[in-house]
Image: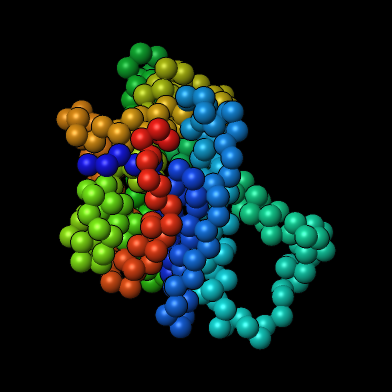
Length: 308
């Protein structure tokens, strides 16, 4: 199998693919045409190359790219419905406040709010709920507190994903997510990127962001156990301080696992994340696979061996 760092993100009626050198966004317009936006990958800072630090840096960077791509795809999906509508008061306010950089401001604010919501929902809330339990705050009691905190975190995540699957628009996004994984599998197996070849591959992939989130949850259980158990404020502060390290370790493990998927231990590590992808991916139709092909073909480079 080929080893590749190519990854992607499902959009509204489209896909984002990020390769070693380029970013490609392919979107299916309401009239059936596939539009492509291809641009060079932003230059990585020196921080994005340092192990354990690069996890947080690359996560923020990819979120910025992802939100921009999502807004780009939304423009085409809403094009027909909003063609005759005037800008909202909020849009006019943002445009006036930030002038030419209004959209960039919205993107950065969206990413910051998303991160804050994620931290509050998946890190701080589980800790607060676990605090209502009554265990000893020493020895095994600390392990029990953190174990239950982790189980609550996983339960909230599963419920969140399940509720999202009930929305029709999200079901379409999950299908594009499946098309992304299937097309990357096909490329990694050295086959020509055709609908027929891609269709036979799995919608689950070990380098998926879902696997990353699961790793973050598992690693947090282990690391937070070393912090002891204190009052709610100290627990929250300690967890906030440790989040970058947790994300950094999860990123390194996922990156290593992506390059050694044939190792038995890596299959064990990837198994829970792959299981979660039963919720976040769906079998795509042929038209969605065609969009994935367009996006993937535009980020492939001849020799990726030295770009990991």
